[in-house]
Length: 581
Image (cartoon, rainbow, N blue to C red):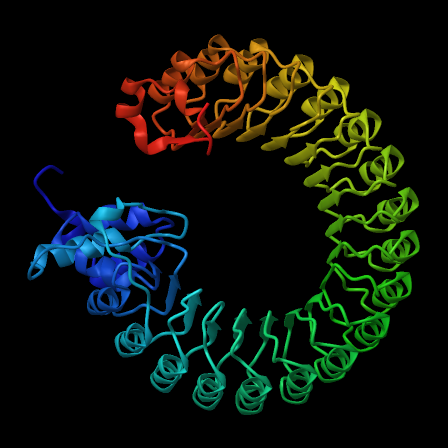
């Protein structure tokens, strides 16, 4: 009733807090905090996660945050988020401090870029990390991404004061052995540790950590750490019996280290390897000992062959995700074994696998009925026969991404449209044998939300019109480099796909301002539009997009096509090519 505050009168703090914790976005939190002073205080108590850009005096800013958000358990600090603070002359006023707060709390992906003359960038230091340790007593998760000014001193201070820490991401931080050793000594509940690109670490630090807190460690990532060798993995294998996830990218790791992991970590579920000195022998050990393995990713190995993959398939029958990337000596036989022995497989990615032929996917189609996602990139020996087998056997398929597989044509994609009625995500980039009849079948049979047919130069109006009429939930569309696409397709998209948020029209020479106007008339949800190298789109078309779409966030276009008026009205959403035309 007007004039009566029933919510504040009737609901206790605990119930309002529980409601606030269930809000799913930052904007909702911000809106609630503005209702009244009571809600402002309760909303601060409800926040458990903070994401902060590591520029703009973060050391000082963290102290402000700690005073306001006392229940925070997870802090993410990312130096790639270059959000800087204004430099003010003289003593800062209190309202300046409040403005810092509103400027800096955000979700990853939001980015403000003030002019250079208005800001002075700084980076997180050991002092800031000490402020994190002092201010967030309940901290369980800390992520420091490329905070290169943080050293062992700051990490030691953190570890000594945050004994509840369960997850620590030090990617790109210049942290040495001493800091890592103290983490092991103080953080006995540590479960997740990421040491990617921590170049100053040696075996000494990781061995100490594994010895001190190995019982709790469940996930470990190591990449580009030149002084981490098999000795570290032997320590992990000896002390980290509960390890479930291991990601390695190193030229200094050999079979010896992987054998130690396989023998000492039988609960391993996720293994990602990019180690040029590891061979089939390591995979055989994993297949023999890690029977709970669910996800395997192999990157750019010349020493892995079908024999190693067969060992994995035979031993790790619980496998659900497999990625083979650039392993040129793995061919059809290895993938056949996966199809025969891994019935729970839900995602398969084959990238740059020139020796994998059609029969491999025939076996996957026969044996992997639960497959939901298939990614194929530059697999020159895979064609329509393989795609038809997948379509007929894997009817739960939801995502199909194919790029530069030139033997895949309309026949295979028609089969997908006829059999895979759960498909929502389809990408056929530069598959130049795919024609309109393929998209007609997909439009009639699949509830697409995402479609990318960039570079499929034989697709024209008929295919896109069929999608527009059959897929009303489409939110993303990339039709770039379709030379035969005309305005009629955009008209149909405007009428049939009101939920469209992102569209890429670049290099579509026959699209004009008229087509754009029909598109944006009904696609009021549009947030992003790329339309570079479209010679028939003029400044008037750009103005139409900017003025008609209230949710537009990004328009990519040649700079010379933007009128002064459009630039004044929407400069924040406009992006240009690097070279003006």
